Image 1 (cartoon, rainbow, N blue to C red):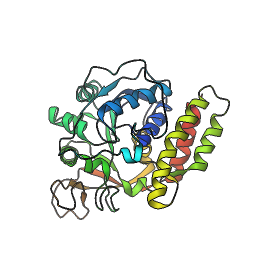
Image 2 (spheres, rainbow, N blue to C red):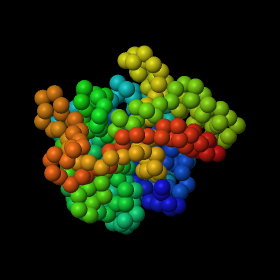
Image 3 (cartoon, one colour):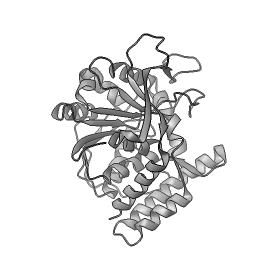
Image 4 (cartoon, rainbow, N blue to C red):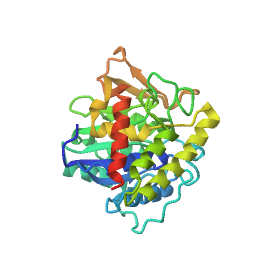
Length: 326
């Protein structure tokens, strides 16, 4: 588990589930959030940056620096996820325009500076495409040896993808960046990437009853109405999209789970293995390939999550939301 005051940097492409992940992090006083870096992915870089600042303001954490990062993928540009998250990235929710501008510091500079300033202690978590992390590793190859823990939300390791039959969105959006990151982490002296993929995130869902239960815990609290309205309006767009495709009104907690694991790795069971990313497949670009049997003869570079304590995570999430309302 994280220790009080553990420094944390979160890299986001703030859509709906990134927003809930940020709220979850803000509810943890033991997490010292040094900065939030933004990247193109679910929405444009400008929208992701604006959304991040607005969500932090909603959580009364507007003082946290926001560092804009890569406006485009290293790979060939692909579509965003606005069909899931809405044009703004926050579904049907509308938040006030943030008062303070984003910091001039670039995300790559912010990540590297934080890693050096807190060498051996920094927890780095990425909930979007890995473009910023890849650029940071290219500029500072020691990054995997400077961070204490690196958690990424991305990949489908024994599960079908969610954007193609074999690829998960964050990896598919910039497979070249993902390949750079997986090749950089792990190995001799390097922190392995803790990979939170669809294999475990699909087991962590909430529904409209859960949204109502969260709102009930906010009743009568100073920030309760604004938080309840935001969560209900943003989640409603996600419910509508999922219902059209799968016939169920559920919300999969991809990014909140990644942040939760960054703060408490005991939430998941992992298997250590070498992971690579397909970058040129005609049908499989963005697929995460795991060498479970060691056939490549490579050093393991990842701790791949294969099981999750979904009920404990749900309790932690609901309790965190209740604290936030105060």
